[in-house]
Length: 324
Image 1 (cartoon, rainbow, N blue to C red):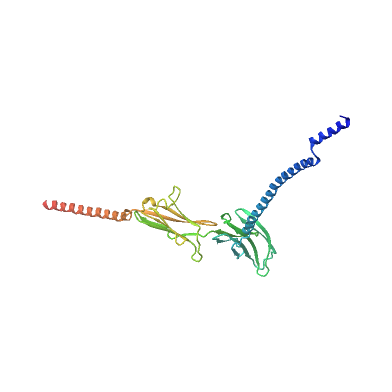
Image 2 (cartoon, rainbow, N blue to C red; image 1 turned 180 degrees about the vertical axis):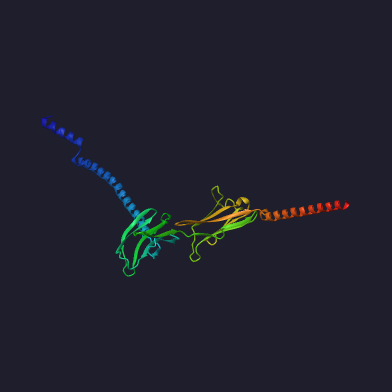
């Protein structure tokens, strides 16, 4: 074989090993497509993650809207004013009863004579040793009043305390607002009953003008050793609760014994705190009211006996004297 033939044979063998140019192109392209599929596989989770993020945002939206709605919730608005007259009267107090959360505007109005030359006055508000809302006020020339106010949204029982406005005069003038929940009233503070009887203890809230319904009532006793909550479910034969209407509660105690002598407390719970009332129960035996009668009867018997003995002795002495 000639040199050119050997070269041609080598070319044919090389072509057979590597294949045609199109096959090489396809093999080169195929891996490129595989890489593209892998890239698509990676990008899909990324899209899914973005979708989850968007979904989280859409979920957070209403929650933040609800929070905004809660913050913007309209509370009943109440205005309470203390008018201070008779300068320099140094202190005054006013009680405010709140049944439920409310926005409360407290205002102090100090009335000073027109002859007072002071053009301005410093004031401050205090509550539980905390000082806040300092301001310098000017007199209302028409009515000669110095007014300072403080607004608070009362939402929980921590805010149910005293708020005092202080006028920085000499001496200082103060007016205090006392925040409280509706007070509990007891029908009878002291009850006396007897062994074996049935007794009913009654508490209620409200002034008769406004309906006040506590969230719930609790009864407990205190005999000096500690508070004991009364559970009518565990002792139905001993205790029974009557709560009609809702602003009234009654505790019925059956088969009284001297051990039932104790102080009983009814506690009313409200959204802004609680109040309670006390009933003192004394249980006596039937012998107790008879003791004075028995003592008198015994004294009469002793007296009659002495008189009888005296008469017998006197007659014997007279008989002996006659014989002599």
